[in-house]
Length: 442
Picture (tube, rainbow, N blue to C red):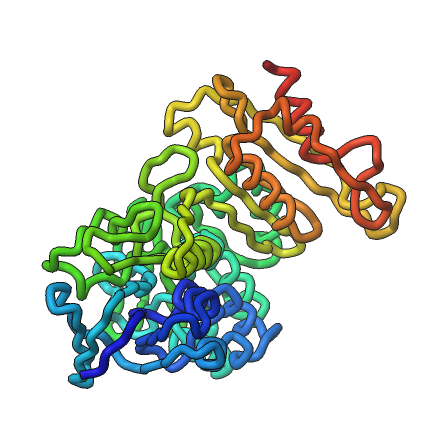
């Protein structure tokens, strides 16, 4: 029986962050089943050929070089009373402190036909290798179900590989969890004009076929038929990878392991971080879905610092995220307008559209922002940005405003910089201008 001071189940972003933060101050062991940890958000770009597959793989030395012990194995069960776990290989490991960082796995809908050949999800190294292989061997047609960021990035990669590409989603617009409909109208049209065949507002009811899918059937009765064996990829969401903890005394909610703001679970000396946890919104305080590395990493850092003697707390999930659609960069954070409405906020919206540089510069592109403000508190609830250049800096600025309770009255007085290649004229600033539009309505 091996003994470990800190034992982590899972080797994703949260586990890596803990190992790098604690370094050799504590003896850490990571047990993960995968051959490699992945840079998940880079996977579509390997299909597109922008990156080699190897560049999406993280080297083991990212954790071993800081003193962590890495074991490749599947954890089969955990005995919380004895503080032990058993692996598929039959090994028993005893821990002083256990960190659960098992992540999440993609969903397959419970419908007829998902067991047919070439029906899959998209998350693992094997998934990536399979799709690259199918592209290289000349697959002629693909259906991606799910128009979130992964689905959008995947259809672009496949479409650029000269494959007939369909995009299906039950909502009428793309990126419905990130953006409001009017903010993505133009980029959605560009995606369609590039050749992606859109089936928005349609829910898949079943897949028909003998060995391969011959027909994708929608609840509306409409369908997609194929002349050759298609690839069907579901990118409809994630579920926490926590099956081994069911029927144990660990408290589990509807969307993951229940934790407090210090990553502590219901069991002493057992912690959980990342996608396997049940998140709460830093805005509403209610449980939300949020399976993002940019959430897992700060959770891991907070836990690591606390294990080293600090007293940090996790503020909650703010939903800052971004993607690229054709030649547009889009991002959102906080509550969208439709989510604010669903939570019964009395809100007001302000928009601003300027340019990414001085308009007189040859490289100038449009940039538009939307801010959502609570009328009662005047605090920023959410924001969205669409631009011809990357938007994560502006998304992060809005997230900071939300996180620290900045009001629109304060945001309008944002002190900003200006330079011909990097901003609009000194006469105005995108976020301050949108704030002015809101104040004019209050």
